[in-house]
Picture 1 (cartoon, one colour):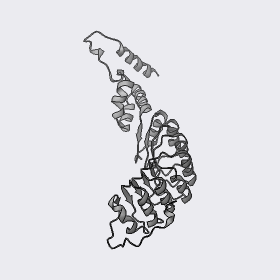
Picture 2 (spheres, helix red, strand yellow):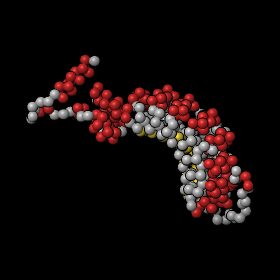
Picture 3 (cartoon, one colour):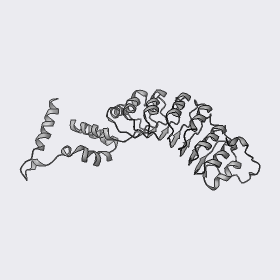
Length: 301
């Protein structure tokens, strides 16, 4: 406490106007306005690592960095599993109040204990990336689903803890998502996906790779209600066939890329018409006949 008071007294003495030409009248870094100059012009261009290094320099530096954290809009520690990273993230959870983008992909140390505090204080989130965060539970999604009304991008690839109930809750509270990723999520049922995609008419990017509950019926709902889609990843969706892809081709007129590797029931019969306007990740098979495929009437309803 004494050292803190001594530092404050030193800064206060520096603020007193001294005679022109006095060397001691030089302004120090932290005497420059924090809110108007230092934070927007300096701190916002520093990485999280650089800010934490600065935070260790002094008590004043610590307060400055925490003030900068309070205004920070982007938190990206994706893939960072270094030693004591969870302690640094706990500091962010206490300080951050205006985060809009939260990138935590492949953070294997992440648990509800560390995630919930930052979610509770940041309801303006627009981007949440939890890909491969295997040690959190559906409880951590509750504040995202209920409080984050401005959410636009949600990535949950390889989150085996994602349940049908969580997707049903998303269906009730969110219809403005533009990007959604639930690749490798095996616990979700076909019915909840059908209901979910009936509300997402603003989707641009969708990844359902290796999700076993994705069927032709799911693709038909996507085609009917998400016609603005530009990129779709269906790699490894073994249950889909030409019927579902034909529905996508008919209704998703803005489609720019379609990934269908390891989809054995999808053939060139449905892919050939798409090749004229979209990138397909499978090489064309010139020996396929295109006249044998007749889509049934159930595609439109």
